[in-house]
Image 1 (cartoon, helix red, strand yellow):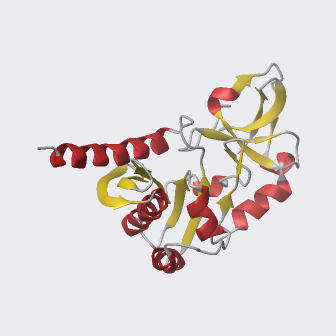
Image 2 (cartoon, helix red, strand yellow; image 1 turned 180 degrees about the vertical axis):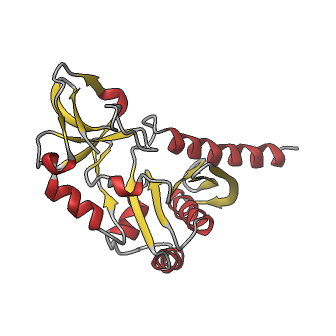
Image 3 (cartoon, helix red, strand yellow; image 1 turned 90 degrees about the horizontal axis):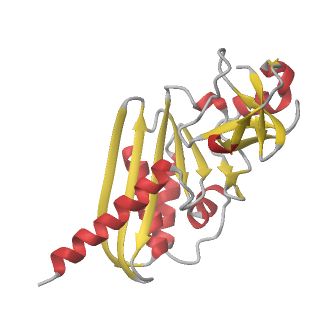
Length: 234
């Protein structure tokens, strides 16, 4: 795929595009960008990319041969660490195709502890699944972990699955080897489930920052709590 000139907050960058020069936007609303050919690969929100007068196009080989080769050959798990609401380790273009399943998960808690709800959105080509589930009373961390559990339960294990979450706590436990000081049984179960996937990739998204499907998950989680609270009223 070629790269086209754009401006990101006034700075000239290279942005990934298709053969017609249209930006390649991922399911998270972001575009692969480079500040210079051969440099580090970042993801930028499409709304922050403005046109540039430079008509030059670069091929993948000219733009970032080392970074792209590494990204395309990488298998197993990867975690995008949050940096200013943006993944520092970006989602490779190789999982943007139709064979990748994207799943978003979020937990909510009305008080901590308090009533818990979860929301999950799974995108599999043209198929969409949503989960809005009330869990009872517990902590926000339990809600976040259980949301990931439901997401993994819905996802096919023989496909590339890209799991998006705004929870640094959960992604740290699953992707960075953090030690579980609480909820150890639930964490152990999630790790065992994650190990059963052929190719599970973890991506950190910014919470309450306009990421469409992540916002939808938050709404589904809070709707589940609201339904339960309405049902409990005399």
